[in-house]
Length: 106
Image 1 (spheres, rainbow, N blue to C red):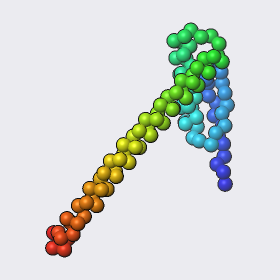
Image 2 (cartoon, one colour):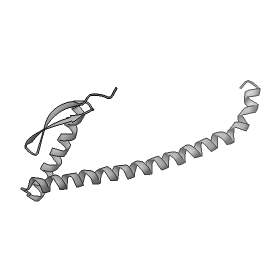
Image 3 (cartoon, rainbow, N blue to C red):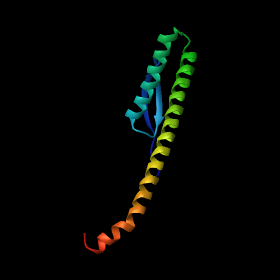
Image 4 (tube, rainbow, N blue to C red):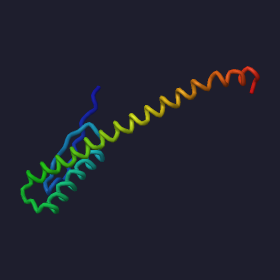
C-alpha cells in the first residue's frame, strides 16, 4: 500500500500554497520556510520586486547549496572509506600476532 499524501497549506513569498506530499507535514513546512526565507533574503539583497525572478534565484541558490553538500559528502565518504580500508589492513596484519596470545588464553 502506498502512503497517502497529506495536504499542508504553507505561505511562500506572501502567497498561500497547498502542498500534497507523502512526508510529515512538519517536513513540508520546513521546506516551505526555507524557500520563503531564501526568497526574502534575495529580495532584501537585490531589491527585486518580481516574484518570479526572486523565486528563480532562490531555487538556484538552494540547488547550489545542495550540489555543494553532495560534493562534500562524496569527499567525506572517500576519506572514511580510505580510513576504514587502512584500519582493516592493520587488523588483518595484526591477526597473526594475536593467534599465539589466543592459544595461550591471554
